[in-house]
Amino acid sequence: DTAGLILGIESSCDETAVALVRHDRTILAERIASQDETHAPWGGVVPELAARAHTERLTPMVEAVLADAGIALGHVDAIAATAGPGLIGGVMVGLVTGKALAYAAGKPLLAINHLEGHALSPRLADATLDFPYLLLLVSGGHCQLLGVDGVGRYRRLATTIDDAAGEAFDKVAKILRLGFPGGPALERAAATGDPAAVPLPRPMVGSDEPHFSFAGLKTAALRAHQSGRHGVADIAAATQAAITDALEDRTRLALAAMPEATALVVAGGVAANAAIRARLAALAAAHRLPFVAPPLKLCTDNAAMIAWAGCERFALGLTDPLETPARPRWPL
Ligand code: KG4
Ligand code: ZN
Image (cartoon, rainbow, N blue to C red; front, side):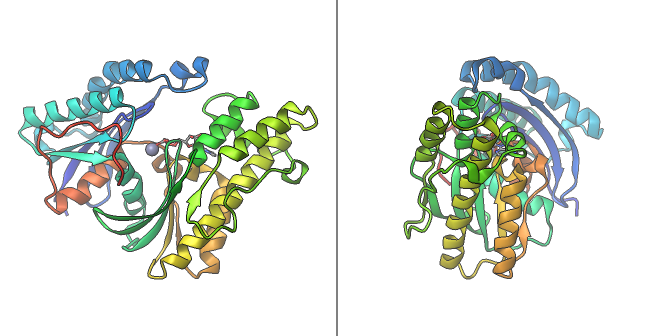
């Protein structure tokens, strides 16, 4: 199958990424430049610094990816770029670069919703994954349960009423001074802690309302830390356990609402967490469903998932005009 060789660009947050993906699921080349060192001194992503770093890095990275694959721009079938949601400066840099390449090469543009990239990335990793599936999308900016019925056909079954799960990891990690980015740091700290040593709330657990809430958990973790009665590792372990319980409980509720689901799928940066993966795998097994979690490098922000969403849309003829605007907010 040679139909659909897509160049993908991702720049909606703090990763600059470019990938070349073919419709048969081959990743021909990919490059990713993390900006962790740029933002670490500030304890979070600074939008202006992110946009500047994307501007400096993107064009050389496009050239490098094409060179790595030994493919001329003229042989690419379409250019896929994240058009939102995300930090608007970064999204604009990536989208304008994608438009310029599409215009120069005379190829179609695919303006990709970053969330759709996460939602379809499991199908890049697993050729057997078919629609419909239940997707838990958990990242720094998003915490949703989606019924994925087909390309472009997404039903939101739950969302967060305050923070995203990744945001909760990041905020508690900041409180505990574990460094940035917080999720992986908190997971490391949690490994030596006792989750039962610190009582933390389980927001929304047991509720019939299909939503997430993590703000109260962050506040409780802050109080536990300020009390001086608990060690950092125990607070980290208790936080991870509370988030894991909440994700499992909300996912169980969504599975009951989507009996037609053929698989339970997790995507987004928080899906890199081993404890969360293990709990969701057990939940899927209890429902006799396959559990699909893409490899870690496809879970966190990357360009292969944008190129792949481009492949899926290109195959359906869903290309976009060059006037397509960048959108800071863009629900699926
Ligand atoms: O998908 P992603 O790379 O970017 C967004 O679109 O937000 O997700 C980043 C989020 C951050 O909040 C980060 O702390 C979290 O994913 N994360 C983790 C882990 N690795 C990344 N959270 C918990 N455990 C991890 N191992
Ligand atoms: Zn993301």
